[in-house]
Length: 428
Image 1 (tube, rainbow, N blue to C red):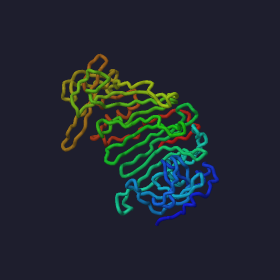
Image 2: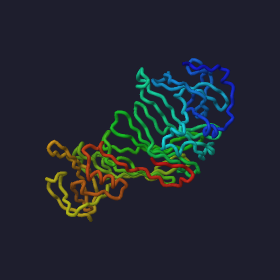
Image 3: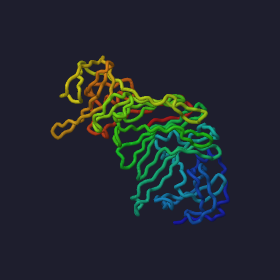
Image 4: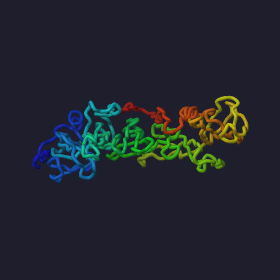
């Protein structure tokens, strides 16, 4: 049913409370882009009034049913609003984020909801809150069959009712994004916190999640992404790496990244004398590091230590371990090593062994000693050392799954060190 408001109502009414009072005591929303005001809950009665991105509204009503979006195949509610200037009318729900009721805020967002925080650039007196844009993808005539469409935002609103925001989660027929870790912490030494996020994105039809590390900052009165680092590692396309993810360490104004990269041996950068023998069964292994530092003049992070690629360092777990010419126990035995032998791990090579109808993956390492000798050793007999991924990789090689998509871990790959006494943080 169409709900109608005469046009003259758009010109009356005032908002007597400030922005903080509205957020703490009323139901509010903020515009996610430029939005138009309508006299009723339809597109037919345009008022020639519009609001820019970041405007704060008080929600005073909404339609019971969702309505079809003219621009895309989705459905959303109409919301009756009152602006800070006293105008009232209707805005379609695809353009605003509505505050989440206190009892419905997810645990991982509660420490950021309705909290006073000091940012910069006109947001020194601000409130953070959680807002949602909710509707449905419109694929079926029966509404109950349509999948949920949802976007979740962390919104920062200043004392003048202007908002900046960042999308932190969402779900639709296309996939789902969720927060793994979110903190507010001053990384740029300007007495204003940055929003640090580790998120997981899963696209429908894909075999693996994509994990990302993002830093957002309020600069010049807008929300700016100042660093975006994809963390997910692949062994090959759509096959997860045994190392899972880049490890990121945040300390003061620096962001250090390290990870183990599985690369085609004809692209191996740590040495130019490694032969490629199989496109499918082998990958060369490189230890990669680089470090960003905040550049105040450029308002961004830049590389202070460029990317370096080096050998992985390992050690033998048991005495008198045989080293073979080829990745097979039936190959020629070249020499033996002990737990005191210093070695470099060059290559991952996996064989498939059959025991009746059962298959088993047996990985080998190509290792190289300090005297230049090299050969293959069962990977489970070698322990990788001196890197953050060491325990994870040693567990993988001790009992490798038949499929890498079955390899799971609860390891955290983000470490944040800093003074968070003036901000809130949470790990989920």
